[in-house]
Length: 325
Image 1 (tube, rainbow, N blue to C red):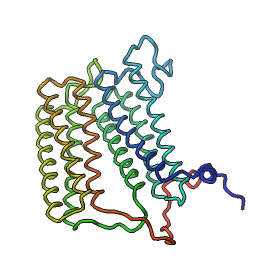
Image 2: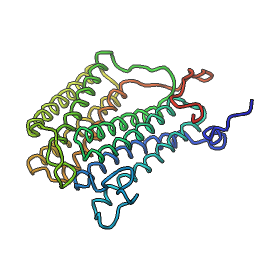
Image 3: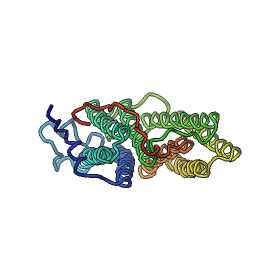
Image 4: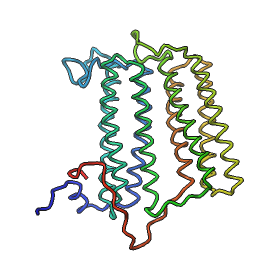
């Protein structure tokens, strides 16, 4: 039977990236996921959400923005073009992971998961435009970006680990507390998304439908969740200290606490200064950094050493068709 001309296999036969390169490629996907969150915020905060009037083209007559559309069209179109940059970086991470010897299929699966999330979010972004910035669709668009950030962080973490059996570094109740912290942080992000959907920054200067709730009351709920997350973070630090958990795990919790404090200051500044666009944009960057810091906490409570020499890695079916593995 003739050998399948799989382009990924052909590249792997000719290129053997270092482990450090694979790790850096995975880190690049994390950075790009954060950039996408921030640039999406810039589109909304500059009222450029409908800078391009349709999708997938910018106008019914033009693929790109016209001079008459001004800066809003340029901002919206630039944000669309960043999707191609993101795809290129995710593609590099996939190819690097596939070409690394030995091949770790879990890494390529995580890379392909990012690719399909990007594709899904690109379509959802088009629906955002076609529905005139429907706040529920806009919120879903942001949450899917958070899902992309989650997968990219997990892939980055796995590039720095081996494929040996998982070894837990703390007792089960401690790990459960870390997952409660992650769940509370997820709820915080979801409620923050509702605040955005109900708040004054609609994404366009024209009338845009908003979520029909009092955004100030939802903001108070958001603040209450912040206190819960901070409280859980402090509690987890004391627990880790009490059980003499490894220093890296305690350090991750301290890093999370520092990011939460900075984000809290930014949040209060934006609230008491009338939600200036620049400060709101910094707050969106902070939300991405908080989520990264949260994810790193439970990931620091376990380790995966290198598989023993001569150990055959368990077979894993790839999540992509055979022709593109």
